[in-house]
Image (cartoon, rainbow, N blue to C red):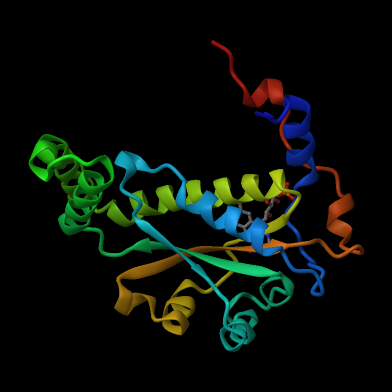
Length: 216
Ligand SMILES: Cc1cc2nc3c(=O)[nH]c(=O)nc-3n(C[C@H](O)[C@H](O)[C@H](O)COP(=O)(O)O)c2cc1C
């Protein structure tokens, strides 16, 4: 098995930057895209509850409407692929039950055996909901998927731009997410940088490692 060397990993993480200008003529191959979709699905979440969905925009008609609801940023027009990261909204005990059923199915265990696990999750979720934090909690989870997506893409030499500069309510409207029980949080565009995207040449601005990493 070939494992990425630390050097290769850092080379790719340094190579990655938030692309401002994609090459509109280049497409991510089907094989690479399948791997990135799978990376999204493999993202870990609290209890494994996966309070999300990833909407991959394939319709040109929808794509054409994205710049107007994305601060006119060109990435949503020119990137090879656009993914909308959405959270389950509202997230309820029914979603916990659905996950329990899925777990029983995948692990070939009777649902009844998972009752303790189910009750633990329901208790935790209810507590978060009572504190008015359920949407925030789901949002934290979906950002893990965003990070996973960007890192996976960088490992494959695929460029991305994470995008909060969007109008989430307008995305919901356009994609019919509210009716489906989901809400837009953030978008990621993926593809290949344009050769003249000058942002690729800018030095990364990060605080010194020895300030950010605290060894106690
Ligand atoms: C959650 C999130 C949202 C972002 N939204 C946008 C965006 O809407 N448009 C954009 O051009 N860059 C966006 N960025 C890119 C950041 O500005 C960029 O990641 C940051 O400046 C660090 O630079 P680097 O990613 O090139 O290393 C976003 C980044 C993150 C993590």
